[in-house]
Amino acid sequence: GLIRPLRIVQLSDSHYSRLDMPASRLRRIVAQMNALKPDLIVLTGDYVSGDPAEWQIEGVKKAVTPFADLRAPLGVFAVLGNHDEPTLTRYAFAGTGINLLIDKSVDIGPVRIIGIDDIMRGNAPVRAVRRLAGAAPAGKPMIMLSHEPDFYRYLPPRGLLHLAGHTHGGQIKLPLIGPPMLSDFNLAHTRGLFREAGNILIVNSGAGTSVLPIRIGVPPEIDLITLVPAPRNAAPSGPASRSP
Image (cartoon, rainbow, N blue to C red; front, top):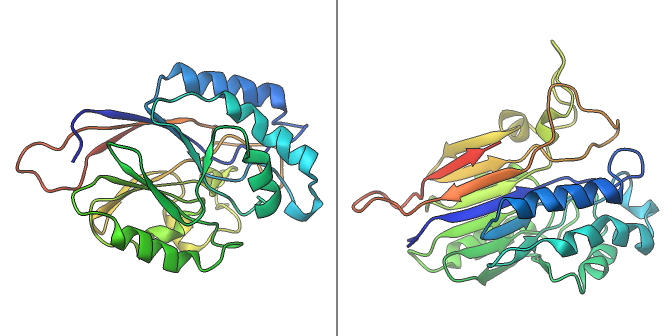
């Protein structure tokens, strides 16, 4: 359904902290994202670190405010992660110009964006996936944003692109030691591009850290995703390319 190529920049799991993700580093990341000159920017959750109940609004604002400088002609869209306290995060995003989508969809011209609430803190987000993805107009390219990749299992097979994070790509990869605390689905979809069940999933390994402020064998990343018009007479599955 695309008429021309569409450039998307995705960032996930920034996990603001004074130790390894201060505001100064976030501002450098924002500058890198803008320099890629995307048509669309998406943020897939976890803007703070640690227990969300321990955060105050001042800290959450510091975690979110640098993203107000993101620039893309089609807009900047975000979803919540499992470390994001919903009320404080909504308040912090207010006035930034970033569209926070919580179980909502929006038509932005060339594509339709679906944003899903966090699977751990949201209100029946699996039902929202089925409702929003199933009700979207046929023939319209669709991009679904969620923090966790798990939602991919509930999508109808209609050539939808799902962008997620959460896994940190494993964060620490050592011989004989696998990524901790991930579901079976996420262990099988820790990082990269997957074409399964008629859809496409891209899992971003994130920029920040959780629990331990280190990464071993899994560098932080910004994803640049280019969608191109399908060849004539091709199946409507929308090819995608990924640049780590």
